[in-house]
Image (cartoon, rainbow, N blue to C red):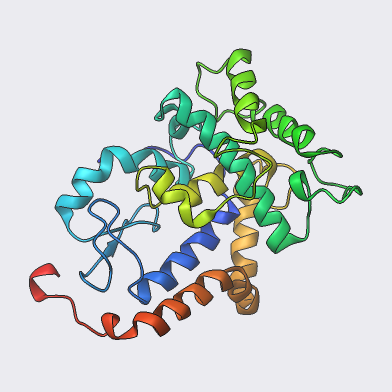
Length: 267
């Protein structure tokens, strides 16, 4: 496995996701990214690079590496910023861009009280990059911003932007910006990709920043954010509360399944 050099800032959502994944891993609620073996059935180990996906064996990790590499580097800020989207085909790139926007709209609405897009209340929040208008204006602003980054594939042209916009404003499309995103369905919609939600969140942060005020220029902001969360466990707990609540519900409904010890042969 080749190692790329650090070339662009790490995102705040990366650290939050790593905290979240560490918790789910400890509760045996993670899955092998290759064969989808469940954590309570087999002993899983995390990828040393991104710390965000698990594997039940070295064979699974090796098999999955070509697919995982673009995400692993994206998480760590390594390699070319456009490598992740460049690893996808044309139509999937369009879907990812739209869903990155939709996920950010939902996250801002649920966790940050920064309503825009389909939740735009008619009164903008000063200091944020979002458009002061409806969902179409807001998504066009997102496209403007992403075109100002280095994360789009080199083949991206104006025609691709128009195709992406038409897909986004089609109210019958699964990627319609007029529909709240269903995060639980994301892995299924992306062919069993267990890392897609984090990838979408990272892409959005690379476009608008963690706080919606523009992307970080270097790792200085990330280091301060990491130190802040390490010193404020209550904020860490707040950020991963949805995952904790989900884990507790699963444990309540299927607790006896998780009491089984993985077979020694699987460890």
